[in-house]
Image 1: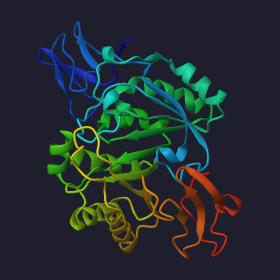
Image 2 (image 1 turned 135 degrees about the vertical axis):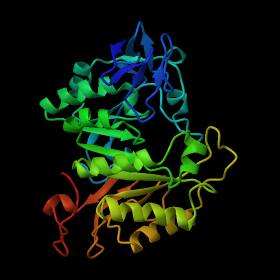
Image 3 (image 1 turned 90 degrees about the vertical axis):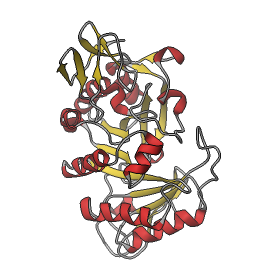
Length: 335
């Protein structure tokens, strides 16, 4: 299903898309970098409006969001396409695909909201591929969700344009943002993108009081040095403060990086320690069991507030008091 793109303008004899930071200039009959927006008779059209490639009811912890309605379920939808070309993408079969290469199911915004309520989900998430690849659809769906009291979530690479952010901002409650590395070299070599727009958007989300959690996939030999982790943590402490949850996750060989080993557990533990030593209050280790790496601890006294086994909550002391039951400290968790 095609729909006119919300943010573009004429650029000489072509159209300039303004959905993401690439700002592609697209001639008649051509598509942009993401392959999801096409210049059709001098009108820029989204080709994948309501075209869902992936649909599931997930635990919110899978996004991962550990401080946003923990223990709840989220209705998750993904489409096709991406504005990155990550060599390590786990969803490359949809993110790097064209619409005619995989099957999709049309789920209009009204249907998505109906299903969210039918399955008893607290929130709806656009995930699996970059949400801005079907921005118009997520925008229409988010507006409906807000009217129905359903929370809204982006799982994003953080490369949206400022124009897109300003449009979705009033209707977005939470986001998990991938901060993949702390150098342009990393972003260019592994993602065909740039670092600065991602940092700017993380700050933009934070300043506009959208709940954010940051994920950093640690890849051996690429972004796992002490200097890399220290730079990432310093950015967060300085720009978003120590209360934003930070997830360090384990890399497994995938897609075009199958020659690499999995992330050593000691690298994840070192990153955790660097973040905690710098004052980060909520730090997690994911994609591997390291004995408590996914538990939420009170930053004041160390009490286990939420105990997890993977995405499953084993015990939740926080929900009873909405504070640390041991020292009465306030905790940055939305319930």
